[in-house]
Length: 307
Length: 93
Image (cartoon, rainbow over all chains, first blue to last red; front, side, top):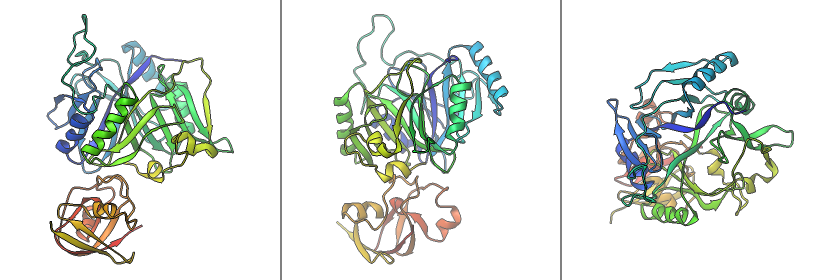
């Protein structure tokens, strides 16, 4: 049952060099740099996003993800979710409004897979970048790189997928839209939706906690994915795999790495999900096709290279 | 352009790097498989090596995979090492 969580709000990614990272996220992926703060973090967003920011880059000695945050419909829903998290037994930390510039109060808690998750209800709304909300044009004309439209989801790796299913479905009100099961019925991957998207966050089973696989950005169509592939080659950016299609979610996709080794995805298309839809299941015996629908072969690097 | 000869002692492999090219970039450009290829950004730890000899410059790499002590002992991620001379290295699993 939905509990007022609407969508991914922002993700904070650690990078080894902030200016090199900006060449990737701003100049190549085409996100808009919107702000910086006094601890050196840089804030970005996709041009269609109404809220002020969705990506925060922080320079550190180890790449990876600091946290990912989901926006809830209002403060009443945030209060209810905070109480539900405490009742469930989560250790909840309050992050005061303004710790991220333009973002309201956040509540932070740990997933059973070890990842830092957050909820928040309020963020400054600066509107779609380059457009007004009265008689708006189709798109702004001065976009760069892949012209990514929004931060869509992230894929995370960790050990306790059953624990995450309980947290996300019973406490946070997401649906288990899609899963991968082994022959004994154990979960190897779980895809959650809090919207009508195929996934708002996904987890793959892995012995180590708190690993980051990728942050994903939405493009409008397959031609834009091919154009992204051209830009990856033109800039000599390390390619992981693609352009191709996933079996899981059926998205059309390409994966590549930022200059600190964090994986990025740009993708389009794929399935949709409503709360009354049954969970779609893939078997581990079909994992090659589930991950890469065309080659039907598992790429070792895609499964094991993480930050 | 200057090219440096790189010897991987425990793989019986020799390859060359152009000036300004990373060790891992040299391996990949010559279609060798002597070192595993991961993120190519100093983040995942897959291409870890031990440097036996040679001059080089290095870029920042994840402290989770190469600690400051290890770095001082010559351990490194080969995607972040840029040779300035011929080098001898050991691939690590």
